[in-house]
Amino acid sequence: MGNQPIHWADVIAHDVAGPQVIATGITPSGNIHIGNLREVVTGDAIRRAIISSGAEGNLIFIADTFDPLRTVYPFLPPRFKKYVGMPLSEIPDPFGCCVSYSEHYLAPFLESLDELAITPGVYRADLMYKAGQYTTAITTALEQRDKIAQIIETVSGRRLEPQWNPFNPLCAHCGRISSAEILQHVPEMTCVEYRCQCGAEGVADYSKGEGKLAWRVDWPARWKILSVTIEPFGKDHAVAGGSYDTGRLISKEVYDYDPPRPVPYGHIHLKGQGKMSSSKGITVTIQEMLDVVPPDVLRFMIIKTKPEKLIDFDPGLGLLTLIDEFDHGRGRAVELSEVSGQTSTIPFRHMVTAVQIARNLDELIEVLRRSGYTSHNVRDLKRLAENVGNWLDRFAPSFVKFKVQETLPVQAKTLTKGQKQVLLKLAAALKLDSNDPEWLHNEIYNISAQLGVDAKSSFKAVYIALLGENSGPRAGWFLASLNPQFVVSRFEEAGST
Ligand SMILES: [Zn+2]
Ligand SMILES: [Zn+2]
Image 1 (tube, rainbow, N blue to C red):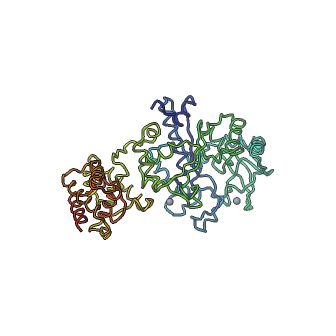
Image 2: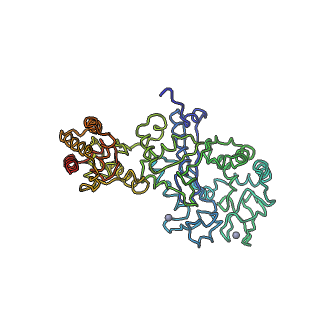
Image 3: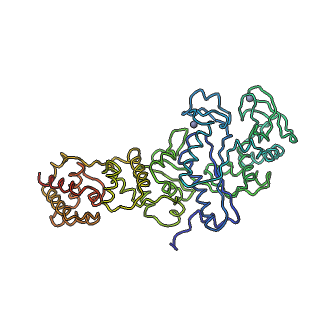
């Protein structure tokens, strides 16, 4: 492996010195999909690379639970209009099952992270504000309002209103966090006086979470509060004049803190559908993916690709190719993707065949035994079988699906004399009691050559006799997986009609 280029995560690890804090985060305003997963997996790959370089690396995850609800998303009931502008942590769960809106979307995401062997330190923005972790940063921001406004205007080219402030008070009357104007700052009491668009006036104590910093200021404030040194984030924040550009300057000039090393990453597109987006309903959730692939494969999809490159994700046939690549792969990307406790030695592609032959777990174990896979733990096997079953149901292209026919398919009438001879010879070969998949596969070629039949047409005969189709799974492995008596009598029947 000496000639392999250094993996991108190791490049980052080599570049930094001393203990590292890698920050990731998401606003839990809707289903958290595998597009969002890229950030956390990228961060975790960097953490692993840093640790294997001998340094200290910590991954943290900040949930932006204190962000306001921006709009009534299509998946929300219309009555949620009254919550627009309120922090996600303060809005009830639209489905009524969790303590808040934000928790409803956050909890399943954190559970999936666990399955992916990613265990970041988790912070919830609303709790950080309520605990006073931001207090000093807010005082500084309010005192340096003009400097911050100037940075934002110069770098982003955006014009700010004269009444703009880096801090948004939470209105005690209407509960909104983005519609009040600050009248006065009283730093010694950590308070601001405000007037809200709802007509109310009041006093907000920012040491108690009664408001939050504007996003472009919140981000650099957080770098300092949590000592962040590396941060992966979506490419859209990395554009010139974007929030990383303004954040970097605010970090240096207002908070006197060295901004983290940026790791901008590209989107994950869903093949043929474009960028994944919760609000547009173009998503595959992480749980849906984990229903289908082992967690290490999901990590691998992200880790094998350089962060700045777009991932065009195809959950159909592309997923099989990805799994093959992982199963046969070596090298750093595989290493950085491994999730301990995943011990399946059965190739996914073979399971796709085995699961479609077997009708229950006992049969599955038998089918696998015939094709040479004997050592497996039943729990892992069950899980893999479930993964494969889900994939077949939801994403598999129709041509990989098949059903072994219980009786001779009507299509057998179309078999030529040559094809029938091939089947009879194959039946005889199977009686020799050799069900080595590779031997059987080669035997189809040998028999074809002996009889002067085109090999393609021999394979077709095999599939017609068993499936009533012109194609099917890799023949040698397929035949080896089936009950040999069944195959022998089927081929004899097909060959003698
Ligand atoms: Zn819920
Ligand atoms: Zn109000």
